[in-house]
Amino acid sequence: MEAIVRMARYFRDAVPFKILPAFITTLVLIALVATPVPAGLTPKAWGLTAIFLTTIVAIILKVMPIGVMAMMAIMAVSLSQVTSTSSKGAIADALSSFASPLIWLIVVSVLISRGLKKTGLGARLGFFFISLFGKSSIGIGYGLAACELILAPFTPSNTARGGGIVHPIMKSIATAFGSDPEQKTEGKVGTYLALVNYHANPISSAMFITATAPNPLVVDYIGRVTNQALHLSWGTWALCMLLPGLVCMALMPLVVYLLAKPALTRTPDAIPFARQQLAEMGPLKPKERVMLGTFAMLLVLWADVPAILLGPAFSLDATVVALLGLFVLLITGTIDWDDVLSEKSAWDTLIWFGALVMLAGELNKLGVVAWFSDGLRGGIEASGMSWPAAAAVLVAVFLFSHYLFASTTAHISAMMLAFLTVGAHLIPPAYLPPFLLMMAAASAIMMTLTHYATGTSPIVFGSGYVSLGLWWRVGFVMAVVELAIFATVGLAWWKVLGFW
Image 1 (spheres, rainbow, N blue to C red):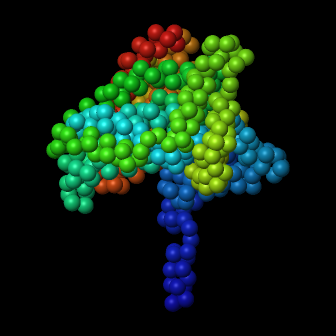
Image 2 (image 1 turned 180 degrees about the vertical axis):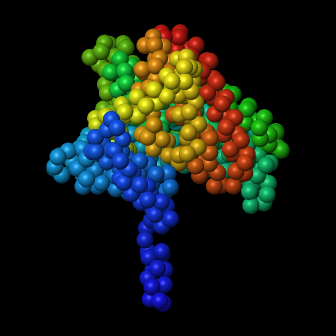
Image 3 (image 1 turned 90 degrees about the horizontal axis):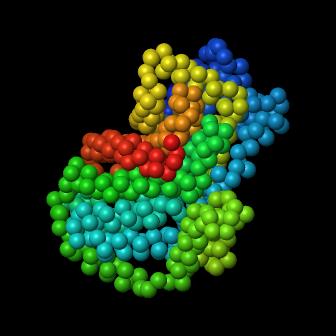
């Protein structure tokens, strides 16, 4: 008996996964496999569905790091041969998405963003904006929001941007004013700044394809359901989200101020503090100048300015542009090859993002997405609601179902293609583009909801400045406010742009 207890303790301490979540995930897989194949699906299609849903559950429950769960999915698809008649064909299918330019766009952009931290340019930008707007707490909030917005086009990891660059700046400012959770003084100014720090992150993520990892997946799904009739290039996405995004960013610090007003409203010392930090950094260093020049080049090329001025022959794919930017940073010594090799988040993204894209693509090939979409469409049609009401329900259900997810990519992979497909069937073609753009915006707005909604949230929440109840309350209000802005300002803006 004692030996069994020792073995149990060893197993508990040695295994690299969470035992209870792993047990629950295993039960989910067994239950799905044991369930009779639903009418309308083939056994292989249902087998792939079981693998997909089990992977999503494993990610939600955080059985192991998301990359390990992605490898599990690749292995399961290959072993089970649910996509092919041979293991050779199955492994080719399982690895097919790793050639996707969309995935490499995110990987290369993450590598580029490493230069922001290495050169100190990210911190410099943050303190620069604080030196401009820091006379009051709300002014500091706008400074943090401006920093987030400037960095967003070049940092596809919203976690790296909001949690790794902006959050340390926010903490240093709060600490300078004696606002510290350990001293029970977080309400002085830190709570407000932490909430602004966080809620700027989902807004900026909605504004650029390269502002968060799942956005290219959203682009891919929108292209699929419209047969590429609506293809969102980097410039098109940025233009569509520009006005509603700026309105959200302008109102967000005010809304948060009303919901979590800081005890310290005037902060005259913030500007001298920021200027002191900038003085200690000294003038722009050569590598920072290279980073600024590279960012300018990326912005011009991603916005397709050469093609606009010189013709379509000068248009470059967004991934090609990203590779060019990375090469510039490497040959100028701004970052080195060891930086590339050690950027774990980029290679982690390659694995888990590639696996989820593969699963979504194979589910579509085997007819699972069409089957689910038909069922969802049938339920909406049976309710007798009008198409505008159906569109509103689809957007709202998709957004608020994020309470059930701890990963935006998992949520988008699990649900978005089906919801877009239903919308494409129910909504008249002339009004389909604004629905698709609303869904694209909702895929980022949903990050506002919880303290586990995306990678940035546990970093900011974990700093202790915001209580759980306040976090959820502000998150719900901000989701409603931002959804309302996109449903009014956004729809009007897209009408002006000619999308409907």
